[in-house]
Image 1 (cartoon, rainbow, N blue to C red):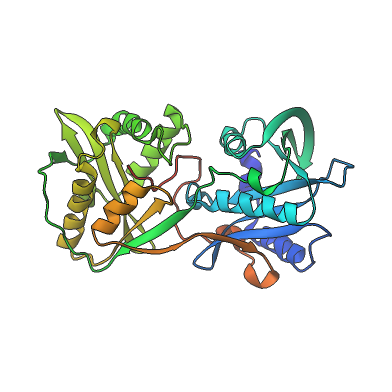
Image 2: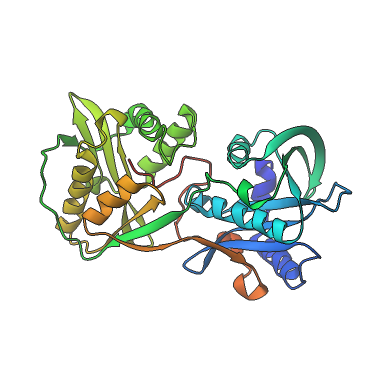
Length: 340
């Protein structure tokens, strides 16, 4: 959607529109779903009969949206899995969706979950704006077609901070704006081939670094160097007054060397020295190495994200403005909490 159009939207008017919609039951064979974190709505999905197909066996994913603050946290995978399950429950055998041809992030997300570009194009008026779209299809909604790549994430906390003995002396320095390019290269190298790998480009990695550099607490964030080369970074951000280790990234050739553990320990020592009693982390489920690292440092798992059927009582009017991760970012960047 054009930026000038998005800037013109009224939160009050949109809230009223949503309330009016939610006061009416879904139409037959349709579902409305939300993703929640600790009872807070962070995304939604709408599904039902295909709007442009006469075949009653074809369903459609009308919309799936996640608060930008929660991109990469598992909300979108949880929603799309719940959406395909809802379509299957309603008796649809296959499904379609429409996406802007230039929305590379979304198209990559759908492709990873089995949606295929079937070369059908259209122009649709969406909220008064003429929008080009391409159609993607999911040929089968049988249970075994649900994404095996879908990711969920869990939150871990350490309170109070208990320091573990350090075993390796690291060479560290503070983070500088001039480190931007090197940090982007480090992120791409570290994530390749891991459970967190989404095939980000250099431009996307640079965007991620720019946002981190604007958000980190510098006195509790460090770079680990070897022969003047950055081989790891351990940053601290503050979310709802809780300090999070985010991200901790280690170069591929230095993983399993203990650097990740020592870098996190360094952050914990810095936080404890400043009188901070609690620290958090979020980890992709299935990232066993990171789970072991943080559990070994005394962190405990607090919970995961879920997708649930929505009712009027579940959603308050300012749905799209409620976000636990305050002002994280407004554009696409790679997920904010990923681990070596």
